[in-house]
Length: 321
Image (cartoon, rainbow, N blue to C red; front, side, top):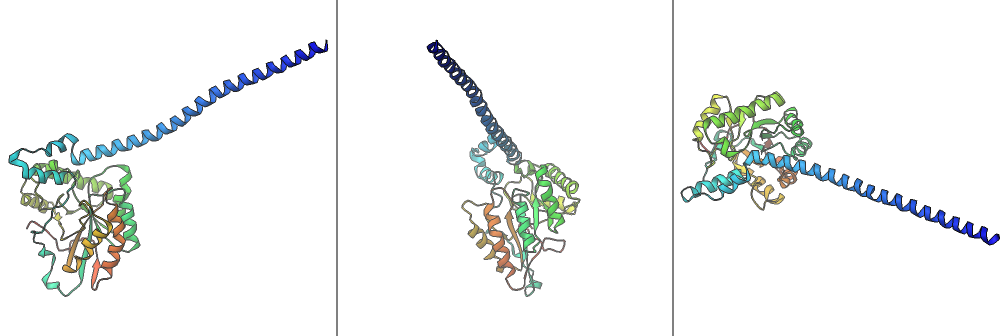
């Protein structure tokens, strides 16, 4: 009888262990896939967010520079247009300036003021960008006002940058809405359309009726199918003045560094009494931001030298006269 009870108890324990094992197995079988699904879901959400951001960025660049096919076609010009197409491609895909060694920039020197104060105008093209707020912070910390020749970027993330430029006393200039050379310079009408679109956009965003303009690629660019003089006459009719530059950071050139950008600016400031300095405010211009504090410090340390924003009293530097 006792042996029978022992066998029953042993059997019962085995049954309980078996049930427990089955329960644990079932729970594990449910939990493990669930955990994997949660992990994959989180990763999917992150990758999807990055994909959407990349898609948005790609679309912005396509709108600005054209489609990949148009860029590739520009890389294979016919023999008769090889020289011009090469210049077009450089400008269309980010070569925002040429080497203006032969351009007369003496107009930046005012003979009547040769012994007076040197005026330095720091200008930033192409913004707003992911670095605009940081650039504004640096300018604020150093009590310096600059000029921003901006493009049209209706993204909500840039609205505050446009407003800060104005609210903090900087000059808001125009640099075309799309910055797409093939569209802007296709005809006088296309230039007017782009200009009006940007001016109205900036007014609606900031309340400023902008009146300073910088041609994409400068007024001496080799891209425009329209005589720059026609475009200049149009600007005059709208009470807008265009500004080129006589000092370039060359931050749109391959191989630029914080040190080279600094040298390109600071070493050349002493050559002029009125210095309009070209820099860029763009996502790939980290070196420009890094060099800016040192540039400001050493320019301010020069004798009889001040850094100011462009105003109606600023002597224009214009490559095409």
